[in-house]
Image 1: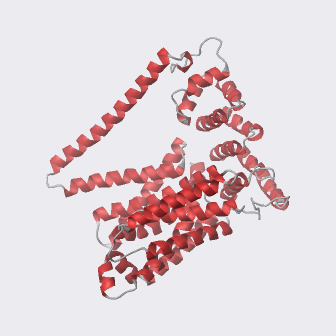
Image 2: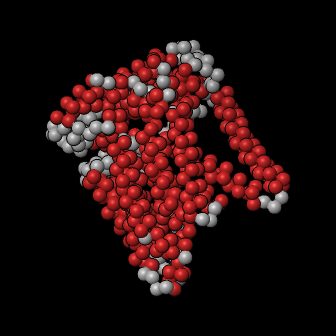
Image 3: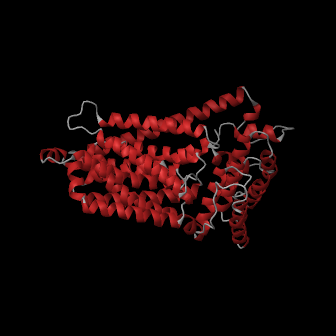
Length: 475
């Protein structure tokens, strides 16, 4: 329980801060019917971070934040000045085009940078599990300033969102107020994307607001519903992430989506004239979905068994090893049908009597995908032998990204060897993205920075590395 509280306290606080501002902004987005403006603006901010990364700057530093903010403000100007009173082209079409172009540009920019694909993945799914308390407090301060601006200018902002016709009739300069609104939006999005990633930020903005809109019309009531359901869904998602050892960002998104399905079902029952008939239809829909899922599962298992029995003996799912089978043959047999899913491979691996020897052999395999899957499976097993193998991988693995993955698993399970291995990943001989991620992980554990610059070279971090080593030695 102590490990759970220590690991999840900062991420949960970050979720509360994010939900606080996004549930409010989501009301404006829903009312304006520009649902994907958040997604587009978030992608533009991510493009700015990617561009700064290409220039050799840390996407987690102040300069990277400045790049993201400038790009986001440019996006705010686009969305503000493309709003028309009499639309010939829906603004949602413009928003979709901007999102697609920003995403394509981010991919092109990342392609020119080392570890660019890993950076793109991080901007999409975020790394909220590793957020630090200083980052949470800084973000809360920024959101408090934005919230204060919206309190002062609430009449104008609410008018152009909820009653645009009245604003035009009174001669308001709607585009100017739109620009101010979207600039404030840009400050929020820039901070949010750096913490939670594009997908989670979009979910925070839209899902709580949609749930609130289903059940209330007043702004205060909508905020209360959006905040309470959003915070509850975040708590459930983070707990599920810890319990099942799955990525925290996608887990929270799925939790929010499940909350929306439940809320929509309750709304349907409440609004129906014939409650019994509505309940029957809802139950029939649930049963139909379950039957489809069960049918697909049966077909998958049947197809897998058919393939096993008639084509490859090494893909048998009964766990029985053929005589004379080597480690690589065992790998092919156990990994067949798991599609890279670590819980599946971990379960199959744990059934083998000599699984530590097998895992050690797989960690030495030439195929990087095999070594990656093994590290993930060991992270899911998480007993003492698995942690020993992960600790060994932090020293012997040649791919620095896989060493970082092993470090994350050790840290998540409270193993001090992970902390010391993370410090070793700060060395000048490693890629900047790995050093940056390792530094963020250490900051989340210590709350310290020690003036370390992950993008410095030529021994510029010698003093910081000594301080990190001294700190890790006491863990």
